[in-house]
Every structure is written in structure tokens, then in C-alpha cells.
Image 1 (tube, rainbow, N blue to C red):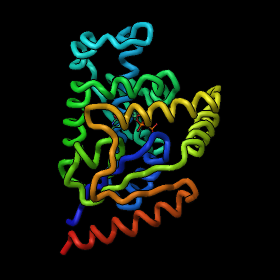
Image 2: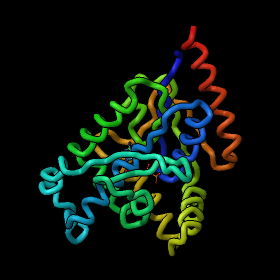
Image 3: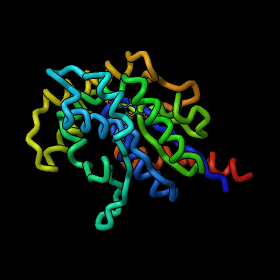
Amino acid sequence: MGKIIIAIDGHSSCGKSTMAKMLAKELGYLYLDSGAMYRAVTLYALRNNLIDKGKLIYDKLIEQLPKIKIGFNKNLKTGKSETYLNEENVEDEIRQLPVSNFVSSIATVAEVRKRMVKQQQLFGKDKGIVMDGRDISTIVFPDAELKIFMTALPEIRAQRRFDELKKKGSSVNFEEILKNVKDRDKQDTNRKISPLKIAPEAIILDNSYLTRQEQLTWVLEKANKIIKENEC
Ligand code: CDP
């Protein structure tokens, strides 16, 4: 009763997934990381030589799309949802820079998007879901009851991603990450299909100088108000 869909879009590495997870936990909703799906397709392409000298072999990828099965399973130790590619846990590998550097190109392919969007819409058919990405409030769930557009300064976003990867033991370079953040924003905003844009009814959240708790409180207040209205 009263369950809603919360769609979160925004720039790369601005903490959308962190916020979406916290929000889902508070509300007892499902969380889905749509970016992880594009990342898993990218990993498949990299592993199966569908990218040659930095160029995507488009026809081969399209041909092999039916072979790419993406799923999410809960890690029983941590309670966190993890991404699976053809039954293999690829949660860590999809976050690494080789995937990050190519994912926005894969995300421009119409056939890839069509498949991912269909799967995402199925996840949300019973509502009670928080999903983050680039086209969630515009294409996947244009009727979502709450739409949020998140952003933060590029340098702050790069620093957060740098800290996160370093903590996981990856050897990372700040300038390289900053370039990736800026390149992806450009590619995501300028692509022809489902570009990243602010949905007309979206609330903008710039979290450059907000703590996780501050932004959670801000969004929770808005979500609870809509949920209450929906119950009436
Ligand atoms: O690194 P960050 O968490 O910001 O990105 P992500 O959510 O993991 O998404 C990785 C990439 O997938 C984005 O840069 C987009 O190019 C693409 N993407 C998309 O096109 N549509 C979505 N709904 C989600 C991600």
C-alpha cells in the first residue's frame, strides 16, 4: 500500500548508488543499480574481444546480446546486492577503470539499452523500488512518483571515486579518474539515445557539500510525504 518508485539520475560518481541504497534500506524497498548492468555488458565485451583497438565491434555485440545474462544476488555475509554476469559474481571487476573507460560507449548502443530497460522495468513492476542511473526518470520510469537529479562538482566526485577504489586496494591515479568522470558526463549528456537530462518534475540535489546523512534526511522527507499522499 502506498508504494512508490523513486528514480535517481545524475552525473557520474556523485554518490547516487550510495544514496539509493540508504534510501531503499530505510523504506524497506528494493534497490537496483542500473549502471551495474551496462558495466556487466561492457565487461562481457572486453572479455570476449568485442572491442578491438578501442573500437567496439558493433555487429558481434548485437549478435551475442542474447548470451549475456545479468542478475543480482544478495551477499549473505554483507547483506549487499552484488552483480552477476552469466552466473559469475563480477561486482568488483565491473567497478575497475578498464570497464569505466568503455561503459559509456556501450551505453550508446540502442539494442543494449532496449534490453536493459526492459529488464529494469520488470524489476519495478510492483513498485517499492529505488533505481539509479541516467535515464530512469525519463525513459525507464517516466511516471515515477519521486524523481531526483543528483550532481556535485567534478573534482569532488573524482576524489570520492579515488578514495573508494583506493580503499579496495586498486592502484589509482586521481587525474585519470577525473578525466573519466568528465568524459563520461560529456558522453552521457550528448548521446542521441536516452541522454542524461533533468526530467521536468525532478528535484535537483547538489551534494558537493552535504554529508550522506544530510542528503538522506532531505530525500527521505520528500519520499515519506509522497508515500503518505499515495496511501490516501
Ligand atoms: O560511476 P557511476 O556510478 O556514476 O556510473 P554507473 O551508474 O555505474 O553507470 C556507468 C555508466 O553506464 C554511465 O556513465 C552511463 O554511461 C551508463 N548508464 C546509462 O547509460 N544508463 C543508466 N541507466 C545507467 C548507466
